[in-house]
Length: 303
Image 1: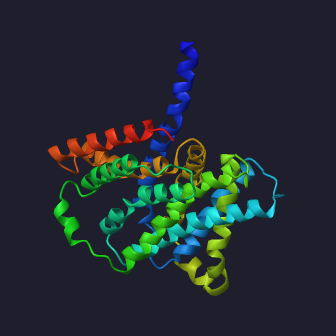
Image 2: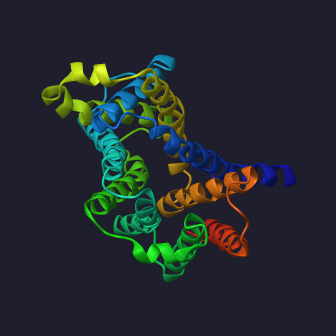
Image 3: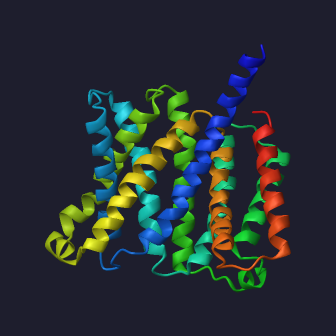
């Protein structure tokens, strides 16, 4: 009996472990993305990245392309939401400071929770809203390196406004991934959903550039450094992270799934402390404790 209970406990713990890996890989993507030549088209870069990742998955495990229109529409919507989020992020960084965007990103789990409640996938509870607020506040302290005075000077210009739309798209992806599976519009197969969402999203997001952009100029501006960055993002922060996200989307509630985005600033902080880049402050201990306690409470709450 204890062996069965142990297996069940491990099965419940697995998606949380996978999402921690997801958070670590996502954290690694930001410095890599900064290597790209700013003159390159963001939508074309994201489109190529998605298509390459989807194609690699399809070649590794070929899937039948004979799907009903509803399934292709679902994959197209999921892929476009995901790709659109990345394109807007690249564009927003040209108009806003990373700290401003990271502060807005704190809203993502709350948006996902409200969307899930709207679709009746989760019950709207004050206790869960409060937990998301507490965990978000802890992440904000970590993000600002306990210097919250700088958040008083935050602006809400064009870059911040469009990035709010990107957060809405990311939250919608996390929620709809589970919804279309529950509605049986797509098969309950994380590999299949990841593969076709990447292919459909990549093709749709780069279509305007293929029609109107100067592809010769894009190729001329594309350097070896861009190629290395694109290769890393394709393999690790597209193929693997989206696959992990799809696996966990079938196991975790949308708000819990999105809340793992709060782990990214924590992982950054731990890396900086280990490398001696950031000095230790007592406020970190309180913020980390609140974040971890909030996560535990979120995970233990009933559906």
